Length: 245
Ligand SMILES: [Mn+2]
Image (cartoon, rainbow, N blue to C red; front, side, top):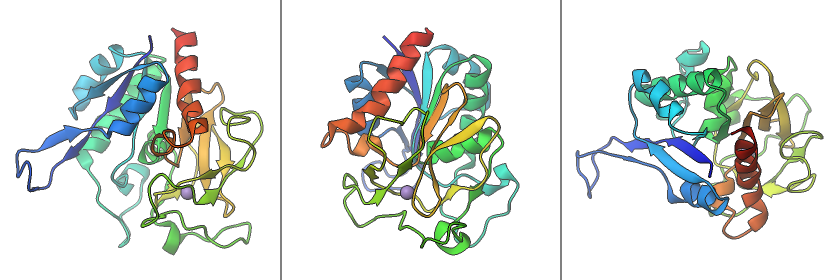
């Protein structure tokens, strides 16, 4: 059985339930999707970079999930006024996790922030705020990439899936997906190629040449319970991980 590690998010603001007794957490739909795909999810509590080697060594693959904005200093920019919440501890921990996964040849999948983060960790850059800083080169209007308040499981924008990648043939050529991001990929990192675009040219999925790194900007984990075709991205990753073991 493929064991897949998920670096956690953490709740580090006072809240009515836990007050300042903060918690590390992962949304259940990520672990549910991995379980449904036949994998055993393991959550890494947010730790220090020094722990990354052992954490990665304990699993067959890593899934990086959604959350805060990626700190722009990690791709060489100061923050613009549109920057949302960032979390330096999470960035530093996940940076070490990605480096160790590459070093130990463990497959990596990213979702939303995870897609943005892996790109940055592999030398890519981000658009800090699509609505204010992006002009589509193809002349199309900017797509609404943060669909809130539309429900999280509802698909709202189309993808153009490119040939010969991990998404090709899994959802059709122009699937409709959900979208909860205000940042986007600017330059892809080393050895990464786009796998799908939105109609405004935003990179919505990418992979490495050997598909050991794969990422989607949308949230299949929020959609698979209502539309089983969206389990496929998890199933294919788990199958890939099992084949590498
Ligand atoms: Mn989008």
